[in-house]
Image (cartoon, rainbow, N blue to C red):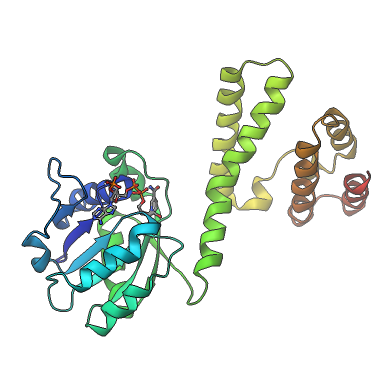
Length: 278
Ligand SMILES: NC(=O)c1ccc[n+]([C@@H]2O[C@H](COP(=O)([O-])OP(=O)(O)OC[C@H]3O[C@@H](n4cnc5c(N)ncnc54)[C@H](OP(=O)(O)O)[C@@H]3O)[C@@H](O)[C@H]2O)c1
């Protein structure tokens, strides 16, 4: 691939993407941060910016529009594409850059990026949410292919919904795991054992759902139509109203999955009644 990429923002996403792109054979001509570091420029824009065909902005959301505004006055190469890594922002300055002939769009890795050295391997299995002008999406597809990732085209006007889905998938299992750990430690199990055992369970469930889809991956009492076990859980959680509330809500969400996996409808109806009892 012939793209020359200049990355602005040398934090977790910027350093991870720089590393993964280089491993994928992409010419990353610069990594620009707020503080200088090894391989990181700062201050005045370096001359390499003008040679870039893609500028990838990976600063925090609150700083994104300001950096894009700075790029309006920067020595960008003619027609350089400007991408940013935010899953939720639609920064107005991207439109201004468009009027100057710079196609723009989103290049959002659907991945928690923390360790730049593991990024190449992690991004290899990841999906990248992309949107924007055709020129921006075309180059985003090429960059994603270079790092071995797949692309998810964010439908026009649906970025907030896209990001909400990403938050539900990536953040809520962590919240649920923290809650499950509290339940288990309140029964006398050590924090370390609870987190280890439940974390392994969560990882296996996530792998199953990715491989087989939610209905086939669902196990447990709702999937089996086991009303008595659900009743026992509700009693066991009676002293933790916030956990109980979530248990009821999640179990109700599980009912249609169990039904499409072939669970007995009569039992599922009874389960629905039990879950609504107060
Ligand atoms: N981390 C992830 O898992 C992840 C995943 C997908 C997408 N993203 C997206 O990537 C973007 C960055 O997130 P992050 O987690 O990488 O944040 P981060 O670790 O805080 O990194 C942001 C970096 O940008 C630098 N910066 C701020 N203003 C700048 C400027 N004017 N010029 C140059 N550098 C500047 C910051 O420098 P200072 O430290 O000096 O403030 C910091 O090093 C966000 O839009 C986020 O939504 C992140």
